[in-house]
Length: 305
Figure 1 (cartoon, rainbow, N blue to C red):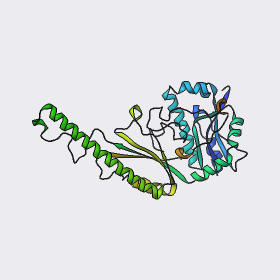
Figure 2 (figure 1 turned 90 degrees about the vertical axis):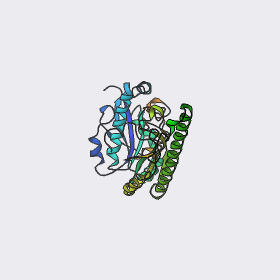
Figure 3 (figure 1 turned 180 degrees about the vertical axis):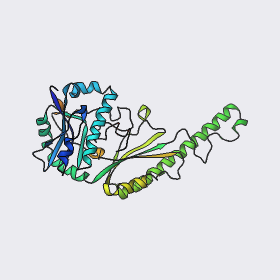
Figure 4 (figure 1 turned 60 degrees about the vertical axis):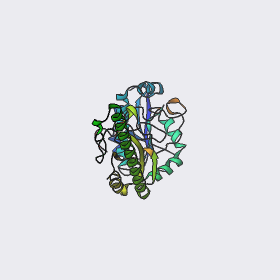
């Protein structure tokens, strides 16, 4: 491979067995993964791969953003590295396609932020991320109320139409009230279990891969030893509510809470090269890139982590 550039997945803390685990990983473009120690960090290292510049320099990345298959393959590889390491040590995920011209520039840029990185890793230690979405079911009426009002067949077409529209509005209003109730229940659960919350944009239009109207799209940072309790309570948030569905995904590495610092010199620019300008631009159910370093799109497809 000629003229490689350095792809940085994450910042990690030293741990037993970490080097052996990294040595067995393949990342973006199938490249081997390795550790790059930060001289200014107390036991911190970057997780990097050498990837071909023809695919990962700034101009190439802009072209690849139009190729959803390529982008999803990179997102899956990025996610796979993060998830493998998060089972062994504290991990601070960086944005998808954070690329530097070489290892020296990557190390220098992040070395300058070593104290910030160490504090952030301490905040995330022993925590996992749960994604929570609430959907209003637009097509199905609640079981307690028929979609078509009784007796409408005896009305004129115009009056029957107006009655049906009123009934549909009632169904929709009921579902949205149910969604608010579910959100309140989730909020109460989060206050007991979660250390932090991140609000993401709701999924709309072609970006909404699941049925229904997405009205809440949040992530919660939960202590690992309380994760199952959190999941069990949130999964019951829609119990007894008509026209609403709660979708829970995780546990993930804490993508939404990484908040990477500004890091100069990536790929020859003033900031790291983001995999996408729009967090939802891949069209799947999860953001690819944002200033919160959200978990990569495509990670939820297939098997759960």
